[in-house]
Length: 92
Image (cartoon, rainbow, N blue to C red; front, top):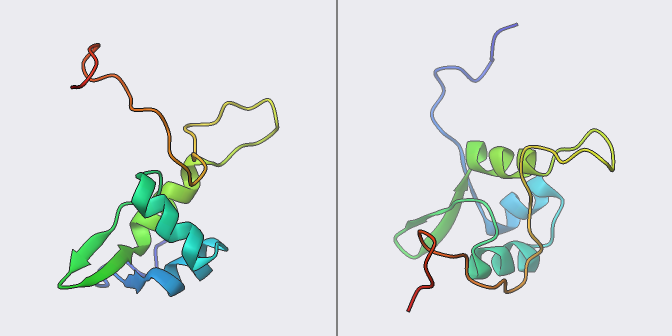
């Protein structure tokens, strides 16, 4: 089965369209961006845009087969989280 988008240029979505694609509110996606828990984004001039591939990859992190399935990653809630240790040491 071939990808119908192969060879097509990358498609970018602004926050409202990206949120709709993920079935989230734009405000939730903004919070994810602020707290660093969301998909990767680019800033083009003053505009925030999301690549479709990055949105789909982030959503795939939360993919599970059952409630006991650890999955391949975790999609954190859109809230502040404690800093992760840096190379085994606390950051200053």
